[in-house]
Image (cartoon, rainbow, N blue to C red; front, side, top):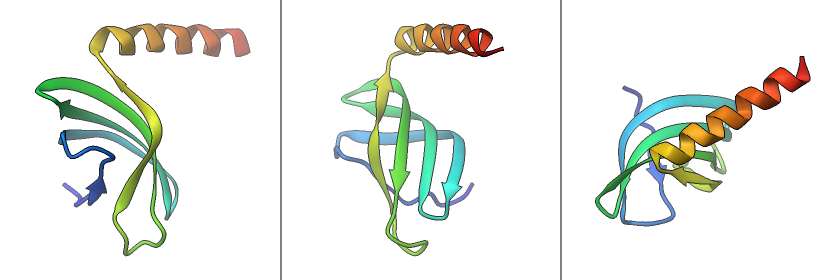
Length: 85
């Protein structure tokens, strides 16, 4: 597995797994992660950035969702995709 070198906004967050990493550029990415925060598992969907390719990734804006919240978001996204067709 790639060394993702992620800097989370909270020290209470522990990375469990990188599910998806969509690179926008060498310094911007949208990552879907499984994380543990305060003893509870979450799905994290965040924008990440770094000043240069040699720097660690810094967590940007996004969401830490419980499973039910992620399922609701997925349902809404599927509906929006169908509306675009």
